[in-house]
Length: 261
Image (cartoon, rainbow, N blue to C red; front, side):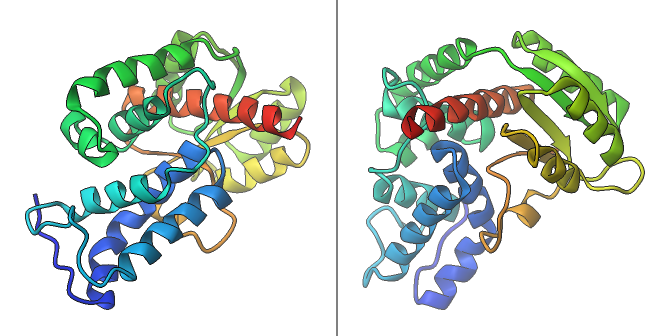
């Protein structure tokens, strides 16, 4: 693991900056909201920068990404976590850390401050909750045929229905209007040079549904400086990341509806 030098505010920012986009992704998926997720990330960073002495977890041998995620976990104890109320709080955290953010079970246990033996159970509980989520009609916006077919298979294996495949902005709009999907998976760059972001924005003018963006450059959409996606998967992706993110997006929709009632 790389070492981390915590000497002053500027060096801390420089050391942590490459990892902030990924923490924002995690925080947004965990809370189901860009504003909520980003607010807790800011709180974690402010806490770290305001600490006179390096936190106990910030030992020289630790990867700064581990330090950052562990600090976030500590300061976000009151953050709302998307998922069924019956599900232990750590379950969705463990799933997102391992399946989406790519941490090992050991690292996830360190981040959450929980015994390693419990991580596998947490992940299985979260997967069971995802398997029990309501089935959705899914629109896939992807211009690379092999990737589109791969996504279609993943979605179908989860028990969802793929209602359309689009490769351009206009295709996506037409398909959304014709099928009224309940979830969208969207690439950022489309076949004709159009934008999956713009296509999703236009679709959301008529439908209140979750959108998961898939991109090779996630850091461009995780700056925390403007309205940005809540759910984001890095390309090339692992099927487990798609499954976890789809489940979290659908659970977040139910979570928001329950708390708005």
